[in-house]
Amino acid sequence: MFFDPIYLLLMIPGMALMFLAQSKVKGTYRRYSQVQSTMGMTGAQVAQTILMKKGVSGIRIEPIAGELTDHYDPSAKAVRLSEGIYNSTSLAAAAVAAHECGHVLQDVEGYKFMNLRAALVPAVNLGSRLGPLLIMAGLIFNLLNLAWVGIFFFAAVLLFHVVTLPVEFDASGRALRLIDDLGILQGEENKGAKAVLSAAALTYVATAFYAFLNLLYYIMLVNRRQ
Ligand SMILES: [Zn+2]
Image (cartoon, rainbow, N blue to C red; front, side, top):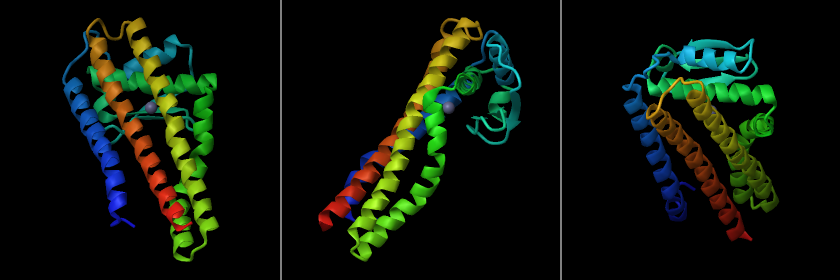
């Protein structure tokens, strides 16, 4: 299946966009990790300030190993910031810390796309493994209905990546408004934060596009048999 020229032709734009997005996010992150904010708040302080000003309590802010491993864990009620963000006073640190607080606020408000995304997680875990298997088995044993079930599973994976987009865009939108309104970053500094979060957003678009191309290919494969 991987040596199918149609697969390569279809997936090359997807892989190119993934590569472009990943190198852009790394480059932008590195650049704005070097620029310190005037206020000099660390990522952890940015998160504390935002949650306090928004009247949100009971959320832990803790460091985590790795680079760009930052996330909000709704079940643990914890904002985890990577070492390069937690103690850093850079524009990138402020942007990323504020973005994770954006997810906290979504959680507190019961933002509907976040709930939908969480509900899709089990389907994604199952679909990303079972989908391609069912499609392959369906094609090998000429059971096209089975292959279509596989496609249905894989479509759930695409849906997950599509629903991720409004969740991430909304968190970044909230983050940029908050760091500006609360004076965490000033003037031109806000542009640096925006560049970091826009680059991160592009990786989610690339992932969704890649999943879409994969689904398209599977549909073509099964369709050709009919
Ligand atoms: Zn996010």
